[in-house]
Length: 164
Image (cartoon, rainbow, N blue to C red; front, side, top):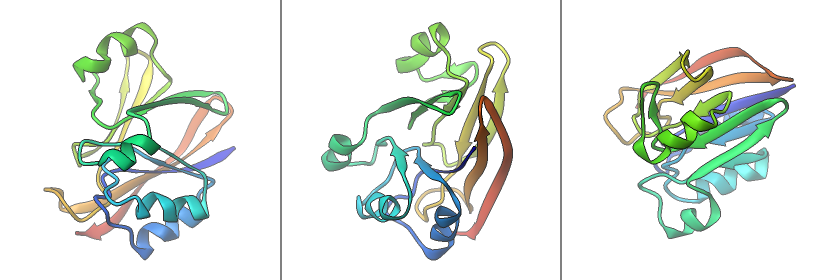
């Protein structure tokens, strides 16, 4: 079993509130718009990190992290990208691939809107953790925490970090 902390849209912001949850996780996943790579360097010193770059990220981030990160965590096929869209409105750049070969868990960021939704057509769970940074139109900083046990995604929690 793995305890996952899912965050996105840090926009160069990392504070003790975020780090408290990083320390409680087995792995941290970042769905893009990292900002300064000191963010991911700090997280990597504490826990294993899987990440993608986002639209605000520079060439250094794009050299270190992929646009799409598809992998297995235990028995769960996971796909992380920054601009992914939502069920029935997936980003055109990935629509054909996600329809042809859907993962069990699809994760994106970008919108700064926390949303968890099951896609009945593709039989996948869609997650967007919202934004935990202080830049953007969101009012409350959010992340998600969950467990993967074999092929099960369980114990999903919304973490609110307060107003930005």
